[in-house]
Image 1: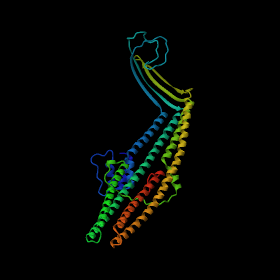
Image 2: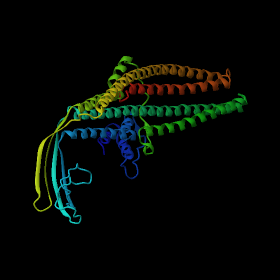
Image 3: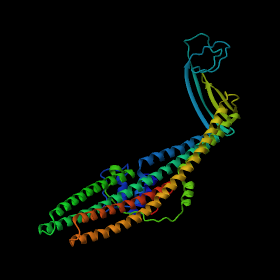
Length: 463
């Protein structure tokens, strides 16, 4: 069980009660047996939904694995600073036929350069050959290649960490949006359930009056049609609620493992308190994608130091000991000293590598500036959308209040015989539609705030 899952479990006990722990265990990859049931009336807060997302979403787990792999690459690069020790042991049964004083370079499959040898042209006599030894090499300095590679790998690891943070922002936003979508869908179900109830009562009243001759027969059919429309809207609303639940399950990374639950929070009722510049400053300070580009620029700078080191020598210390021979009295050999290597000429390869690294660094710097401009646009757009959505809530509420008065007056007029069924049904329909618009306006405002939190780099939505 990972540390993140243990933290989520502890928070579940502290904040969400035992049912959240059951949910975590039921959704966990290592869960065995039937999934524990959520107690009746189990509630899921937005904060708990986000904790589940960050603990179980497969996309996050994959990105976190890549981040850890990048950290291991840092360790691989740092290993060059430590001693490199090698051991070897060989046994060969081979001929020992020399070819005179001929000198050759070592070649693959030729164990040693030919010598006079024990015999000449006697291809059938073989002898035992033994070799055992140990050698060590210690890096001393190379004018930047090794440490430049370490810096490059460290910058790449930082970039992967920023990539994970960027994914967290997207996952938090997606979960928040799906959570508010589910809230809105359930509120719309309530709106249409109320509409169906109103129209059922109206139909019963109209049928009684029509039988008594107090209302024309058309009123009955009009009321029946209006009830059928409301029932159709209710069917659609309930289906949308089920789809929204499935979408939230998917956003949390639970899929079909998610049990039944009910949202515990309501729509965010927050007013604008900070100016746009505050969100812009926070975005420039906290946006992971901007930090990721800066890390990539650092990695490109480290590669410049890496390649420039080839203009200068590499110095190391070497030492070793070996035993080899063909009989019971093998020869003992040891060595110790400095090893200096210097690529005198490599076909201008170093020049091209340095130039390439500099161009990559310049490209990263230009990309950073482009990202800052895009962040500015994203934050401005999210801020203005949130501001407009709050204004839509006020207007939707005013419209709904007016529709309520309109429906009350139309009902009185119809009961007093001053109005007709068309006027009443139109008032009922507008009241239902305005109620649905008010729900949507509240949901849109909450989602717009979640988008602003994401674009400004805030990992947790404000409530």
